[in-house]
Length: 195
Image (cartoon, rainbow, N blue to C red; front, side):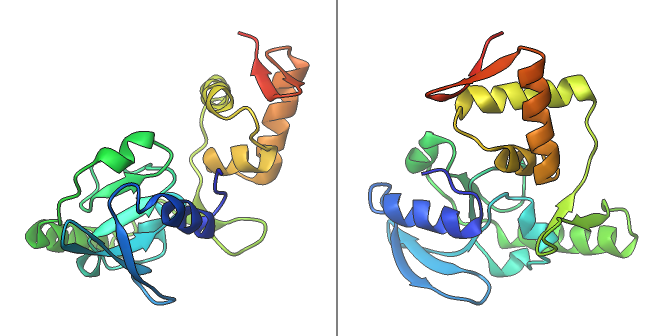
């Protein structure tokens, strides 16, 4: 199963948690989303579709020990991140973050936000989740799209748009343009990259 949102990430994690040595002790509606345990260590855990959603949702990283997501688009973040799209996540040893570093990262984030140096947030067409829009050059966007299609030939245009941090419609348009240019075609197994 390939999740399309935060709830999907929770389902995928819960299906594979035991195999990776994790025990889910509680799931809740409040922040953080869950308390999980591994090797007698307890982790206050937040689930996100993309790790960057953690900051976009305004979460206090001092109250969380671990982010579990599908896509890690914030490498070097102050908290440990398990990206479920990478099968090696089950083998990773997760250390509890240094509270001093978490405190520094929290105040740095607050200062940048106060100075309005963070990228402006926009909402998707559905209006329920913010996206940071960074317009990539067309060739770079196509190359990233081809890499995504090689890994996930069954991806929809809407999901491609989400992975590119753009709209569902743009994702569908990219698929259409790539297909019209002969770079990809659809067969019984999904999208096939010809290049």
